[in-house]
Amino acid sequence: MSVVGERLQPTVFELSRPGRGGDKIPHPPAGALDRIPAAARRATPAALPELAEPDVVRHYVNLSHLNYAVDTGFYPLGSCTMKWNPKLNEWAARLPGFAGLHPMAPDAASQGTLQLLWELEGLLAEISGMQAVTLQPAAGAHGELTGLLMIRAYHRSRGDLARTDVLVPDSSHGTNPATATMAGFKTITIPSAPDGGVDVDAFRAALGPTTAGIMITNPSTLGLFERRIGELLDATHAAGALAYMDGANLNAILGRFRPGAAGFDVMHFNVHKTFSTPHGGGGPGAGPVGVGERLVPFLPSPRVVKEDDGSFRLERDGERSGSIGRVRSFFGSTGILVRAYAYIRAHGGSGLAEVTDDAVLAANYLKARLSGTYVVPFERACKHEFVASAADIKARTGVRTLDIAKRLIDRGYHPPTIYFPLTVEEGMLIEPTETESLETLDAFADVLIEIAREAETDPEIIKTAPHTAPVRRLDEATAARQPNLRWRGMTGAQTPCPD
Ligand SMILES: *Cc1c(COP(=O)(O)O)cnc(C)c1O
Image (cartoon, rainbow, N blue to C red; front, side, top):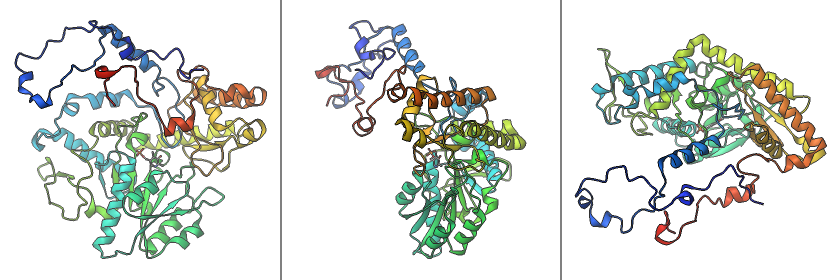
């Protein structure tokens, strides 16, 4: 049976008919092609599909309708904060002064953008309790790398070269150990305690003169606030190490907990999570990094500087000798930063605290609604997300979390994050965010409860789901290890990408 349903259409190459493409776009002016060196010119014409304009437009618009998006439905993906992106942000990011600014424009012609970036740094510093912020990193993982490079520079500047280890809890996002390794550190994994928090005794035992830093996600990837955070931070500093906070879950603590004030030395913001701009499909994002006093000298350059006369400029080369240098071209992901700025200014301080309160309320409501049907491994109140497990359902019926996720697609929902964190068997990490209505939350809970009942009465229909999606169940292992992403319908010179 084909895994492809009838809603998937032929490719534009299959729809192509010779001569059908519009010849309406003027050819290059006479002699233009002659100016390209012969060696750089094509020997055979590009094998572009030939289609009439309406066929091209319909092809892509229909394809776009196969997408699931926050604009079309609820998106309960945990650990990602796929929150509603207000249309106001889009208006702001498209203002010609921002969208049309050339990246090489001189400071004098970039005052508006520089001012916005300077103000956004200040807003993020205030929100996080950090001393200063860089907006350069392109995403959270890149922010982690930037933060760890600053930690490395800090220890080196003190001549302390023995600090080679970074402690990371076992519930952390995979980017934490990956980044620590990339920055040249050795990762030491700290187990979780039964309450879902970091095992403080194991943590203390691992700390020592070779510890460069620790990375803690707070609230954790289980949606739980790290209750003994003060003890963890004190122990870290007493050992001469620095504390990194993975700020991906800032959505749960805005206006209620300031990591810098609590003693964290450095953190990243996933502005595409906390401050909107849903990032499905791999980006773009932005991962600003906030630092406490000790790391300010090492911030990437160039920073935006405000002059006494009120004008703004970028730091000049070599102006701050301790800097770890550039981590990203130009100003960073400016469009995403404009959206974050618009989001923060539209909400204001009390509005951001309300975001957090509503996100936490929505998660606890869903958790309570599902807890009779699914196992909720951590009973205490969650923050913005929670883990539910289908381990019991699997034991009784053979239906796994993966099957339930696929069945949700039949019911018109994007599945939550599944099998993450790895520490919970058959886990689903569910994050509703603050913008969803009670009706939406109830409808989603009803469907998850119905699917659990269906597992008892008709497990086959779940195990073979999805039945209505454009693409049916794929062999997950083959799809991950040997993905076939290329269409090979053309031969010879017609092949767009010859072997
Ligand atoms: C999303 C996420 C990251 C990585 O952030 P990206 O912006 O996707 O690079 C790191 N840690 C946690 C906890 C996350 O949820």
